[in-house]
Amino acid sequence: MDFQVVVLAGGFSLVPLVSKEVPKALLPVANRPVLSYVLDLLEQKNLKDLIVVVEGESAALAVSAWISSTYIDRLHVQVAAVPEDVGTAGALRAIHRRLNAKDILVVSGDLVCDVPPGAVAAAHRRHDAVVTALLCSAPVSGPSDSGSSGAKDKAKKPGRYNIIALDPTKQFLLHIAAGAEVEKDIRVQKSILRAVSQMEICADLMDAHMYAFKRSVLLDVLNQNETYQSLRRDVLPYLVRSQLRSELLSNGVQSDENGNGTDAMQNIKILPSQLLANASTPSFHELFALGPDGSASMTRKTHKCCVYIANKSKYCARLNSIQAFSDINRDVVGDANHLSGYSFSAHNNVIHPSAVLGSKTTVGPQCVLGDGSLMGDKCSVKKSVIGRHCRIGSNVKVVSSVIMDHVTIGDGCSILGSVICSNVQLQERVVLKDCQVEAGFVVTAGSEYKAESLAKNEKL
Picture (tube, rainbow, N blue to C red):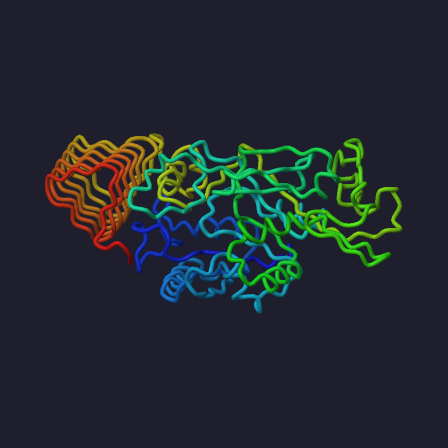
């Protein structure tokens, strides 16, 4: 597949889970950096020549060092550092001189999925599209598009879904809105409505942030719209809005994005029966380009915005919020454990051979216990991930939580639904429920916290 692959691996969002030592791309999912899931997926499909884009010099150095040590002789990776907070579109704009293939496959570095990238690429080539987006079933809890790094990120807030409009065959993208835009009135280009006659509105699909772009069109959009920062919020909606923008070459009259223009365009009517029934019949783009009388005498320029919808059996999630971090860790050691790369025991868990368990300590199903970790007597671990070289005392309960590397937990602690970052020390009898604890933080003995973010500083 002669696509150039770009992985957008982010920087330091999701405070307090990240640190200068652990940028977002290296946050652990089942004790593996989240970026490894995308790199492994690409490697499995023989996509081994990659550009990994990271925001911030220090994050880029950390990611580059990890890739060099982990994927040596396996992948050829260029790590490109771009300024922080430039956004996904800004990141591609910053590396535009490195983009030289006809088509570019752009993948988010926080994507955890088992959808083959080749399927997206094939759909893109089949339709000769300017963009093809991977859509997946939205998680039950609802996607978090905010990427919240706020203190509590209780994620108990209502999920903001994408509103996506597709043609009847679900191959072409007619409208997309996300986040705050969902609360506004839906406005669809008149030219698109006239051409397609009917559309299907979906609120149960997620934009997975895997896109195939025609390079020339992508770079034109980025260069002509220097304020665009986001592929999802800016570039993709722009391409969708303008896909039936047309030029009537016979008289030089050009229509605007709303489909306003000559009377001939205003009178376009295409019956539903004319819409494509399968990939071998004309799409509404071709029918639109023929003109209202069915002739090709009036040549209209169109471009195609397509989608590839993953089968519902496929796993697809993005680590774009604190809640998503917890959910993905749970899934990858649970129902989606085929993604973890581990061989699970007969008890449906993974306990590293070097880990030591005390008397009457139990590690339940859907758990991972990392290399060199020690647990005292009468501990209980359920549906949780415990990192490497942790020291856990006696009578400790850990439920539905993620504990990163080198954490010390005193006797009698109870941890429920929480994320404990590396090098944290919990003294005796600490109780945490739905909390996040920043790397290196010390929680004093007997403390109890609920839905709190424990951090030394508001910002890194």
